[in-house]
Image (tube, rainbow, N blue to C red):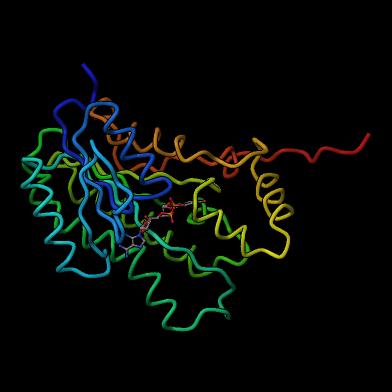
Length: 252
Ligand SMILES: NC(=O)c1ccc[n+]([C@@H]2O[C@H](COP(=O)([O-])OP(=O)(O)OC[C@H]3O[C@@H](n4cnc5c(N)ncnc54)[C@H](O)[C@@H]3O)[C@@H](O)[C@H]2O)c1
């Protein structure tokens, strides 16, 4: 029997990239999965789908209630919806700061708030937040995005403490640069997309971008009852970018 058999999962931002790979993997491993996304039109069976905007509390509450009713409960919440921002602290105006923090931080608060009453009814409840290496390493041109993911890291730890005695585990994954439509859009916008891609690949000790499926596998590990003793952790999925200090390769 698969580790997710009989479990019900909700994945925000599950129509694309890391979220879609996670929803597909959870379903392949036996979970019933609902995707919550701004645009779930590309989501196909066996996945269920609900349209919601994580910046709109009423829409989140309605989607979470409907998903829990349709699936007959909720065991796993994957808080993954997020948006990016580029620039130093001088480059983003107040409206951009408010917008990115609203999606990336408050979005997770809204879905968790709506999901917790259902998760309390589960014997195997888990929340996994998609954080980022930007929470733990200083990356150039990512002041706002990094601040939002730093908040996600701290929120993960605080939520893990608050809910551990209710039997709800809370963890996060910290991906490096992942080959998703999001990064594709960033590369398309660069002056020299091939050079930009090569620079991003070279930044990771493995010399390549992370695959969405590799982040999905880490999320599924943390969401699985097999990780029942793991809570309050951040799992790096970054090709060694956070932990390793390699010597540069010198030309011979
Ligand atoms: N791609 C990377 O390199 C990378 C690295 C580290 C962390 N992350 C994080 O992974 C997560 C997913 O990123 P991705 O690369 O798969 O992006 P993506 O753009 O491919 O997918 C994001 C999904 O979130 C949905 N979404 C965006 N705003 C929403 C909202 N307000 N309400 C509901 N849904 C919304 C989008 O419709 C989309 O389907 C994000 O939290 C991102 O910060 C990505």
